[in-house]
Structures are given as C-alpha cells and as structure tokens.
Amino acid sequence: MFKKIIILLALLAPAGLKAQPDQYKAATEKIGQLFEWINNQYVDTVNFGTLTEDVIRQTLRQLDPHSMYISKDEVRAMNEQLEGSFDGIGVSFNILNDTILITSAIDGGPSQKIGITGGDKIITVNGEDVAGKGITTTDVTRKLRGPRGTNVLVGIKRRGHAELLTFNIVRDRIPHHSVVAAYKVTDRIGYIKLSRFAAPSKREFDDALKKLKNEGVTDLILDLTGNGGGYMNISILLANEFLDRGQMIVYTEGVNSPRRVHNANARGEFRTGNLVVMLDEISASASEILAGAIQDWDRGTIVGRRSFGKGLVQSQLTFADSSMLRLTVAHYFTPTGRSIQKPYNTNDDEYARGGVRNTRLQSGELTSETTITDDMPKYTTLSQKRTIYGGGGIIPDVFVPIDTSFNTRYYRELIGRGYFNQFMLRYVDRNRQDINHLYPTFALFDQNFEVTEAILEELQDFAEKEGLSKNPDMFARSREHLKMWIKGYIARDLWEMSEMYEIVNRGDPIFLKAVEVLSEK
Image 1 (cartoon, rainbow, N blue to C red):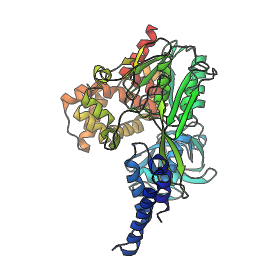
Image 2: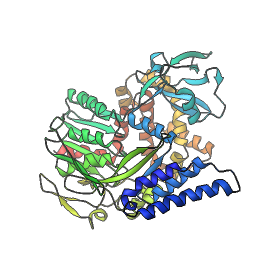
Image 3: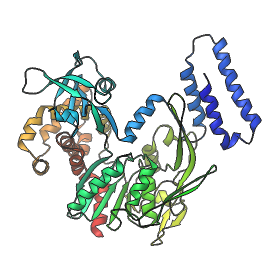
C-alpha cells in the first residue's frame, strides 16, 4: 500500500540519498512503519490511495516547483492537451441557461459532417433529458466524449424548428489545435499564434506558414504570449525552422544528466525572412527555448515582457497504476549559456498561486524595463555581439509595458464573475442569423459591424440583473476595450479564432509594437 512512496524514495536516492545508504534505508523503513501503524491502530478507516498521493505531493514540493505527481486521471487530461487530439463528437460548447449551447462545430468533425452547427442546443443525450438539470461542463464531457467508432444520439433544438432534431453521431478523433490563429497582417507580414508545444504543433505550423508564404508573406510575427510550453522536442523542431546548420538551439545539463546539445540542421523553411517573437510573463519553458535561441543568434527581435523563467527539465516516470512522476533532472541553457530558470524557493508566490503577473506588477517590472535589467548578469549575442541579459527568463529586445488603463474593478468583476461571457453567448445565440445575413463574410463583418451604444447598455443591464451594480465612470475607462472584445467574440463564434485575433490584436500593444518593428526593418 505504500509501494509508490518506496519507489519515489528510490528515484530520489541518486540526487542525495544514494551516498548515505543508512539514511535512505531508515527513511523507507520509517515511512513503512508509519503506514503500518495507521493501518492497524488508527481510529477511522483510511483511504491509503489518497494518503499515499498526498505524501508524494508534499515530498516533491520540497524539491523544486516543477517536480510533480500526476494522478491517472490527470495523466489522461494532460495527454489530450499535448498529444493534440481526443475522441468525441467535435463541438465547442458552453452552458447557457442550464442548457448545452454549441458555439461551433469543429471543421471536418463528425458533428459538422452531419449538419450540426453553432447555435444548436443539445436537449437530450441518448434519450436522457439534459436541459434544465444543473448540468456541468464535466457532465457534458463525460456524456459526449467516448471511444471513436461509438455512437451517441442527441436531440437538438434549433431556431426556426418547433420539433427536436435527432442526430446519431459516430464519435471520431477530434484535433485539439495548438496553432490557434494565422493570418496576413499586411502585404508582407504574417502572424501565427501558438498556444502550446504539442505533438501536432510542427505540422500545424508548417501548414500555416505555407499558406502565408503562398499569400506573399515574407516577414513573420510568431506569438508565444500566454504559451506555457509543452514538449521540448517540438520547441527544438520549431526553432530549427529559423536557424542555420550547426547553430545551437539549446543544451541541457544536470548533476546526474550529462550535457546534451541540440543543433539546427538547415532544413527550416523560414531561415531568411524578418522575424519577431512575442513574449509575455506567462510564456514559459518550450517558448523560452525557442525565443532564447532566436535572441542568442540575433535571428529575430524579441518583443514584449520578460518570460516566466521555467528552465528545468523533467523526466516522466510511470507508476504501475499509470499515474506518473514528473521529476526534474536537468537545466535548460540557451546557446550563450544563459540558464532559463529564474531563482526560486519552495514558498515562491509566483509558483504557489500562479501569481506571476500580480507579483511582477507590484514590483514594477511590467511597467518599466529598468527594474528588470539593473542587477541581471550580462551576456553577448553570438552574431551581432549585442548585450543581452540572464538571470531567468528571456528579457525582450524591445520592452512593451503592460496596459492596465482599462482594468477597473468593474471590468475585473464583469470578466471574473463570467457575466461578459454569458452575455456574449446570449447575444450571439439571439442574433446569429441576422449577423450572418447582413455580413456573409468576415471581411464584410470586419469592415462594417459596429458595437453600438445599445449593445453596451444591454451588457451593463445584463450584468446589473446578475448582481453587478453599474459604474459609469469605470465603464467609460473600459469601454473601448470591451467594444473590441465584443466584436472579437462574435467573430470567434461565427468564424474561427484567427478572425477573433485579427480583431483583438489591433488593441494589443505587444502585437502593435511587433508590426512596427517589422515595418521599420
């Protein structure tokens, strides 16, 4: 019953316990004795599975912020994110008025193929009424996902149809895209946003780049803001797209892990065009590997804010029950020798509560670059011999302060309580047909649709009914930002994420600076 803990201690032994066999033996025996006493003498029944997992998690917290235990269920969810696909019916949905509202059917997925579309509402699943029953997102996932080739029968309520429409959907493999947006910004500038480094990311990037180059794009903005990382090998493959043969991408090294170097092979498809990489304080790990290589070789310009600073390499070790230990075994280093990992301790607020943005905002780092580089070690780039900085994370070549002008208390509550998202679901559901009729293409919508004062008033009225009191002064500060996102949400629900980013990027200071940098080049 404590086998996992013994295995964990054995795995940790090389890092510090192996040299003290008596101490290691005493530790394993002590843990065993503890569980034996609990089993034989404790007053109540104990769930040893849960207890074991708690002990493992607490042990790993003493090591570093990135060594972690992953339960069997968490492994399955993690694999779906990183492998880039899952089995299901192929829809994006939200819960609206206790009803499953389909916001869009995934292109080429089983639902789209049989005629299900955005705006449809799922009322029954396999004959069971699911509307008005307090259904949750977890419930929907459990009911609609399943092995490919299996069937699910759904009853659909569609505007203009009095009766339920019945669809028999055969589940299939559904892609989970990591390239969430790609579009042409100007005649020669293209934009690709990568949300994570997953198994299909290289293929998706290649497809997006090929499409943009066919449209005449010669310069590229690669958006890694908000990208927390993923597979190291994928970041190496993508960095290879921009570098020449023999140029180092990254190397790893640890006490028990010999130095391992990864170099480019000159097979990349974008080795000469002008390049800007967008970063922010959430960009981490694999994002930092790619951005560090680009910066060290002077291959492109890094625009934005200092990245998170996650430069520890984890090895995945699987227990017999399919749960997993992710153990830190080495450090990432950029080609100039910079360690990507920022300093940390086991009580680091940025790690403990994910508070990197708040912590850096309070320190002034997000509003002034001088606070970042004052005490940072200096390095020299490999081609142009420019000064760059180490100390954790990738410090951009062009700093862009965070924009907090719109971020009032009213705005935070409007977003944080979910009122904005709920309003948008209702608005699009109610007006989908009219908008499609007036603007049959995104180009027409983009050029001609205006977020009116009536829509803004409707949003405030809705939030007030939900419990958020109006605040005209605060709303005025957030007005233009909200107008941009209202239009972006409508574009997302009627078209794709690329169309949403085409709208909202016009209000993103990092994106605007990236375009400016490429325009100057």
